[in-house]
Length: 253
Ligand SMILES: NC(=O)c1ccc[n+]([C@@H]2O[C@H](COP(=O)([O-])OP(=O)(O)OC[C@H]3O[C@@H](n4cnc5c(N)ncnc54)[C@H](O)[C@@H]3O)[C@@H](O)[C@H]2O)c1
Image (cartoon, rainbow, N blue to C red; front, side, top):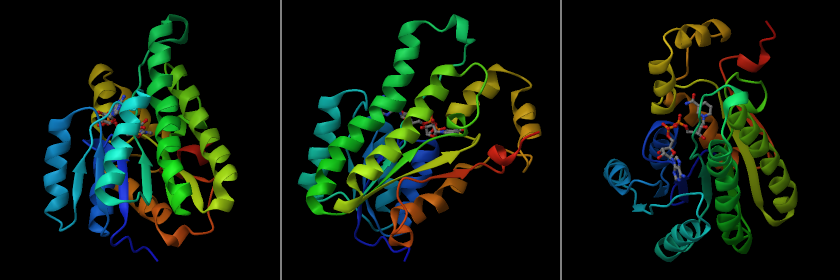
């Protein structure tokens, strides 16, 4: 059920953090990998790790906000492997600023990467999956889609949008064999969060206190849900976003 042997998976933001952990888990489950992100050097090193597991890896650098680069990466994947079975739409970023101080260009950047990037990649890969008549798309959401995070207005708005892209595509493509789901982490120990904890001394302690499990997640704790959603184990699930949040969204107080 959880078998991914011989499948082709494309992961954005695969160079580090959650994307890197999910890419390695897909490789361990037998999938070949298409690795996308902006930095070729970071991806080349992940590709070596992936190949050491006995599966193939294609490095396809792209900025997910650029429709031409997204299409070029998808074309490269299809020309190398002939299909794309799984898409992990993971690339993301944030800025931390009080809402009243967010400049338009910074708002736009977050929306471009987190929301428009997810749409562009889902559309380009989705066209191929619709042709194949099968595929599983997993959009990386966040607790910020469900609960407001102070100082992260653009991020919250972008992730709320991601959840609706997930539902919209799921409904539109369900009959044609393409499933679209989300995975929503809470605070996870990655470079993205390290930048915040480094800047704010009490941040990590406040996150722990708010989280029923009283700790942040490790990136590898995102992979179980990702493998489940990528594989036939979730064959009747579409339009759903799974919270992987240590109890964060269940917690009212
Ligand atoms: N770390 C957390 O606490 C947390 C919590 C909830 C959701 N998330 C989400 O998980 C995903 C991964 O986050 P992470 O913590 O691993 O972040 P990270 O900063 O460690 O990694 C993000 C990756 O995305 C890539 N990326 C950024 N902008 C890009 C662009 N324009 N084009 C292509 N690639 C780009 C980066 O190069 C990097 O490889 C993001 O969508 C993030 O919003 C993270």
